[in-house]
Length: 340
Length: 222
Image (cartoon, rainbow over all chains, first blue to last red; front, side, top):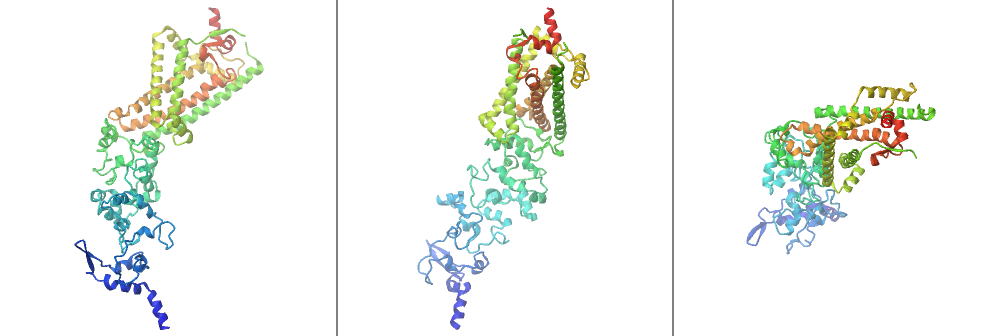
């Protein structure tokens, strides 16, 4: 009986890991590698607070058979478990294997300083994206990416998106909403969410969603209006020189039109439109952008639209009545003969 | 076979031909943009050689239409034949009464049809409506074609307005062509399947007597 209790006791992960922590639990534990001290300390509390809390050390470091181990264990990679069809139940719903296609993976292969999974997710302290302490909690993502992308972070923190995040509207865009999380690709790549061909769809994910836009007070109609505009149609047909959302709204530093620094502030519109339409001046600010003719706020265009709508119906009806009357007359002529 | 009478001069027929070609091209290239979200629109844009080629085709046909319009203005101002044709196209009081009489006849209230001269009220109406529409299309079209220039000249809402006018007037042109022009020259029993005078200028003497009695009488009196 005592042996059985001992065996059950041994199944508790903490007990299994105890042997590892004899060394790795010491704060100053480490080795000298290539002339530099390398800490081999593992903050066990971090692991216990992570999503991997149920696993023991050797379940991941599975080439460690004898403790203490004499050889340096193999490097382990997240994708060793997180692949489609794995049997240990590692979640793959955000398609982590897409990382391999990303610019990050490509740069890493070329030997550049580029992030691997653990750079964003943490090593032993991998927390769920719902955990407010996680590196990938929505509010923390800008800081996580900004560790390397400093200039972009500086611009982003000024943006209305980050202001909304700070206000607690967590649906506001953070880095990965536009850049995607695993398959981060440069805009030149046609598969990229930021390729001019795909920008509208990327912004539309949120800006076409009434539930999110209700919280921010931005109209969902903007995307619809853009798609119906000449720019939108041209883009749809692959004319990539046509303006997309980011051409006028900027991307990291997105600001509302009320902000004097915004490229879409009425005072700056001439310059913004002037990037493509060199003759643009203050006249471009006189009127509405993203016009939907059948919406009242389109101003005079709305009234012209409605006039034509009614007028066209009247014309169709009138012309059809005329044809019917004429056919009556033709019939009478056939029946009674010509009056000559 | 009944005798043929020349009704339209060659220069008149050439103008009609130019108008027909440019308007048909404009309609095809214009409506493939307006309905670019539909399958038909996508097929048309493909056939036109892509989105940008569609635009070039539209502008090219627009220049043809503008040329035709200027040609026509020249014709009705500086040629004797043109001035006479124009005079025959001016709307007079008789056209209004003809219209009322014709409706009465169609409804069975009058025994006789009104007698028409060279152009009946139907043809005059057609001429003036299409002329008016073409003027709207040309003016709004020029604003859209040269929007890069007009951006610095007129407020943006006027450009939006031009777009609205251009699109709606185009719709009206099609409706008018189908329900009025096609009806009176193709589908109406007196002309079915078509009135070939747009091609060779000749009409049957019988037809002229039936439909333009006053003109027929004048020709006979000469």
